[in-house]
Image: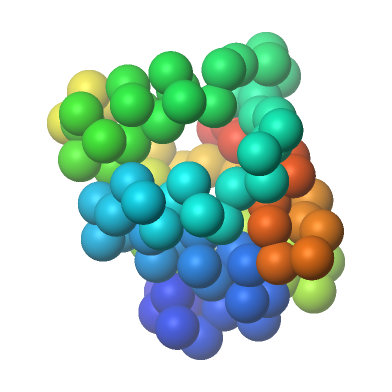
Length: 106
C-alpha cells in the first residue's frame, strides 16, 4: 500500500487525505467549483455521491498503486455500505484542483 503522503500528485494526495480524514471542508477545497465525476461509468452529482459514498458511510481509500504521474490510482476502497472493493480512480486536475474524477470497480 502507498501512504497518502507518498502519492506523487499533490492534488490527488490532498483528495485522498481529505477522504481518509473525513474532512468535508478539505475535500470541497480540492475540488474545482464545477467538478464532475462518474461512478462505474455513470455521471453523478459530486455532492450527493460524496455524502452517500464517503461521509455518511465512513469511506476510506487504501492506495494499492498509482500510474499516469499519480493521476490514476488502484484503491482498496471501503465504506459501511459496500464493505471493501478494489476500485480504479482517474483524476483530471487544473491549478491544484480536481476538475473531474472517475471511479469504478477495478
